Length: 475
Image 1 (cartoon, one colour):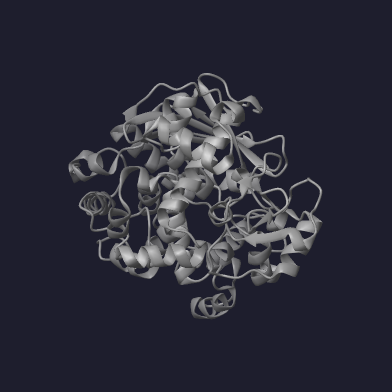
Image 2 (tube, helix red, strand yellow):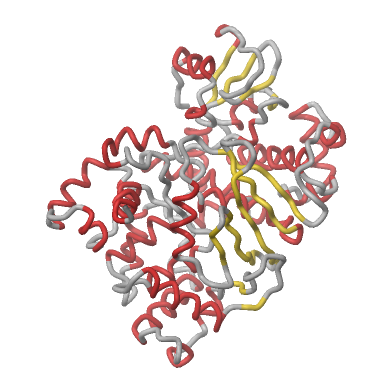
């Protein structure tokens, strides 16, 4: 179990500093609840406080989530070293509902770990078992939906990953001392019958405008829109389809996610994907401290992830050696020709990006007339086949360097493309696109060897450094 310095944690609680929100939780022995560091309730004395790195550990010790600060809304934590990255990856998969569809043994096999290794990692970093961690994630999502949505209690249970309404009711009463109906009575309704709305919090500073601009310049027409202070896209997941939207919330430290009710059964993975796409778990203070002067002009700049990892990888392949605008044109043509049509409530969104399975069945001749080189077409088809066959995963990387090496075994994927995929799809914070012309221009007249040497001082946040260097070229 990783220990926390009590005095330092208590000072963070006293200051209500948003930079520490979600980094740890404070449990109060006299009330039996655990809170975020930003809770506005009267601060207890240090002797009555216990500190936990995550909600699951606090709940395993018998504490209930605070109804005022709502721990289920806190940002997650950002990994640092290789082991903690692996543990965070497992936690991310559990938050996305991995154990709703597979056993612990199957999840371990999916990650190329033994079941013992997986359990040991989770217990080391979260002090609970994988099942306990998954249950906490489900209950916290259920609590959010009961308070903020118009879904029925049964729909909330299934949207939160429970396959049994009786089990849901029992665990909620056992853990939180409340029935679903009692929690619902305290709700602040954000949603409507056809939409689910929830707020996703982050640690400041956060440059939403810059991230929206980055995504907007690279969006596939008909699939996603990033403009006018709002992000929207079509979604297809596990036979469910619809549309999602994201925009700044009234609370200055949150974004508001709107999800079509047709996607309620896959809400867990959607929220997890959105949080990764918009890098909501980042700790900017930690990153900026390492990058120093490089990050000073834009301290809230984040690392964009990928909602659809195959879509992002295709975009990376098509973007080789051409401008961002030209690559966006090509990826739009690809989506329009091979994607599935869909009706949404958002004007301009009417295409579901082609799936891996569909792309794997394409031939080079199918790309005729799109302006895409034959070599690029072959690379896309080969990548889709490798993913469909299980040889490569774009959803996770226990060892990002090994995953990048496997990617480069595919003809047409070189170091730059592999590193870019690692940045976006694996959300690997230390990826650094080798030979990138934009980075070279931003650091001119340094040679690339000198740039690599300089980048060593930015580890393990070189991907964020790349974002700052690209941003520098815009000004």
